Image (cartoon, rainbow, N blue to C red):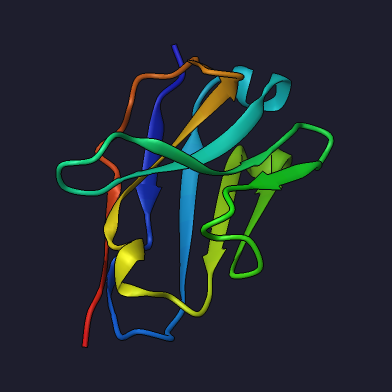
Length: 117
């Protein structure tokens, strides 16, 4: 089972930036796409960015052009650089290995991102 530990969240003003990190245990990290998900209060968890083990990326329309996902396979780590943050980006952010709608790891604690002035 993949274990996931997210970090890097915090309180930031609109227009600010944050960089999230996720360390994954297990070889499954290197075999699958990794994604960053977020869940805002009262809303379903959604996939905001994904990256294949070959480095191809995809983004939700709401974050395209502002967020950048990357991965370091040697460190079993996936990153999410978030720029031009908006209040609607406020959520708990999680990472997981995935294929389509299937996720492979146990959800971690997540990291809280709050965008507010």
